Image 1 (cartoon, rainbow, N blue to C red):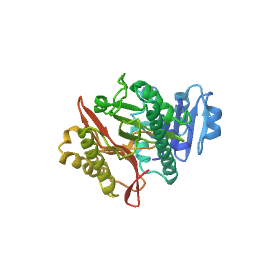
Image 2: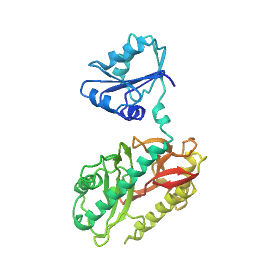
Image 3: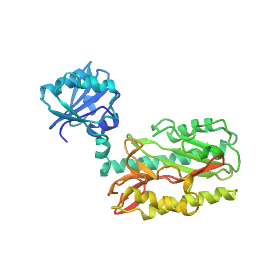
Image 4: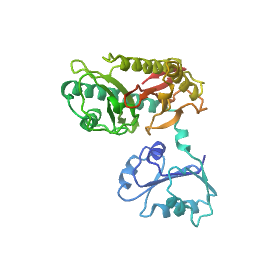
Length: 341
């Protein structure tokens, strides 16, 4: 793939070790160009690798001039990243053929390098530390705090007081609200014997972590550890099923499987327990510079699992108007087995 154009920040960062919110990246044969405005030019020249930085007040115009001057006949782009207006302005009055190849950057990033794995592992470790800090706060001061305030505290604790950027806005859900996989924080207040679901992650040098814990709320000894003892029998039953589904998928996942087979490993446990219709999302997704990357671990994915792929395994059961349980970890395929990062 010699000639391609990128405007997605993470895709560009992957190519040259720097990005910003106003840039066009152009790869033409053996040459690459980072085209940006005067606000970012100095930093770009400092941090960019393997490309020429071009400062411009009209990025599209400068890009088209480079394409014309190099007599480029064909260039690849990803239509997911381009607005219709941007595409029209980029292609007008150009003889170059723009070839749409969706997700070509994400596909390129699907198998992680050893350096990327080091960063992803660090992100996961720091994310787990964030969960520990949040657990300590909840045990000490979480009583009668509502989901909105706990969401704010999750941002504070997960980011280590702003030291790290979050992978996404945390999900904090108590009891009934946890039956919504992406629940919005409400005014529901935390009390003893509640079920609490927390989904959060941080970025380390732009690489994401993603973890979900479901816990029993006891202010004498609260934790996000995987072993949980609930007061309500139904809470315990559902939790144990979901944990078994996750552990089964992690234990049996192998290089050479289709992604759909890993999804099936988790889904079968939940289906056999009689709750198949309440597992309403895929088993996982790739994690990297983006919080959602390839491979998708779902029932339709024919992607073959390879060494150095990193993805989540996160089965869940969601009982409407009752509660939900999700358990999620970041997984690395290493030496033919799934390893929790």
